[in-house]
Amino acid sequence: MPANRFNSFTTYGVGIGLRIPHYDHILSRKPTCDWFEIISENFMVDGGRPLQVLDQILERYKVVQHGVSMYFGSAEKLNREHLRRLKNLVRRTKTPWVSDHLCWGSVDGRYTHDLLPMPYTFEAARLTAQKIREVRDFLEVPVVVENVSSYAEYHVSEMTEWEFLNEVVERADCGILLDVNNIYVSSQNHSFDPAVYVNSIPPDRVAQIHIAGHSKYRKYILDTHDHPVIDSVWKLYDRAIQRTGHTATLLEWDDSIPSFDEVHSEALKANKYLASASLAAAV
Amino acid sequence: MKLLTLQRRVARAVMTPLSPSYHMRRVAPDGRPMSAVAGQIIKPNDRLTSFERLEIYNRQYWFRVLDAFSDDFPGLRAILGDRRFDALAKHYLVDCPSRSFTMRDLGSRLESWLRKHPSYAPGRLQLALDMVRLEWAEIETFDGASEPPVTAAALSGADPAKLRLHLQPYIRLLDLRYPVDDLLLAIKHDAPADVASNAMQERQKRKKVSAVARLDPTPVYLAIHRLENTVYFRRLEREEFAILSALQQGRTLERAIVAGFRSSSIPAQERASNVGAWFQNWASLGWFVAM
Image (cartoon, rainbow over all chains, first blue to last red; front, side, top):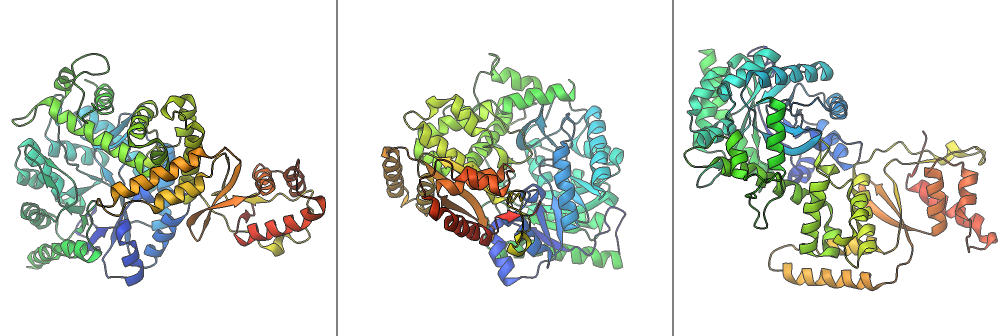
């Protein structure tokens, strides 16, 4: 039963990111896993082993595409070659939705390969929403945008990050990939209450949730995806799930990657929160 | 400030090379203090200055692209040594920043850049160029397109004067001056498994590079290809290389074979049997496709 029009994926339970160190385990042991999230760019190639592995995964598992370089917020036009390759991949995976980040990362055709924070201005919201609409119309699948972790804020910003996110998704009429770890990281770096952020998000637009670990330094926190999820992030996740209902959830672990079983066990902790949310909805 | 203006300013700062100690430079490329550049765009907070906040992104950018570039060219690093390789990487990435959505393409302009900047490979330019060509070909072959191979039956009875055989799109043909294929395999084999063995393996690597560098340049012909999606380097005879290159350029089978034996020292009476064996081998590797 879909929770809302952007969250028609309640059959997607808890997934993990598909990462190279786990390929052998997954292909040989065929472990149970609700779904895998792939980094689209890793498979937007013409052939070879990446696509061979992907096809083997697709035979057995549900796969959702997550991008890292569409850069909806870059002031320049969309990269048509990127879009063409992404659409080919969408046809191959039959992904139910495509996600990428609410950020920018390229200018004048030069790529930083980073998820740079947006200036929270109305001009940026307008342009970003327009590009999200273009991507959705081209790909012909729902597009959802993810809030990023950030380490800097701009003088020119005219609103908070959550107000900006809401402005963009309303204008684009798109879904949200709510990354509760990113909210926590940014809240520590910019001194805001992460609960206010989570409570300000329109729950009817949340199509997916990300959870992850991070690294704490003396003066700031980095979104490194190389640790288990901390309790404060689980609390945010709990709150988010209470608001959104059962939502497709994914654990990101991208560095110092432990065994498949360890990553999967960490992800499955989300089931406790999902179950209580389902129970609350039933009551 | 308009969005495009802000993004240009931030990108310029983020992509400015780091200091020798891997921190953000104090002076921007335009001569202004970087603290002033950062202060105009980025808010400070109670723990970090504008400069320090911008520096996080500056360092992340360089660590990311340098790591990716280094992963792609271990052979070139072994030839140049760490210090020269790092200098080359920084200069190359300043001159040729990524213009692709994927970091897989970072090294696509390295060969042409190195030809224009020979001072980055003093005394070993040709060896370095050969290695760059091989390592880039390996990247392209790894995820290049493939087509269903043609069967021998499909070719039987075809007129060699009209038949055009196409090679798999992933195949790269290289004419080199040094046996960098053997060198690269040895370098990858020597990749340190742990820190303790690192120093000894680095010495072994340097020895191997020096041994190859001392060789007189002699032609090496190579096909970089895939078998069951694993990349292989296959040494070719000069004639094999010429025939395959001619086919790749779209020549007919007859013309390709003529081109292959131009200036060949293989006796005329042995050529037919050579050609038969080569084609059988290439076909068994699935190298020919119908286009």
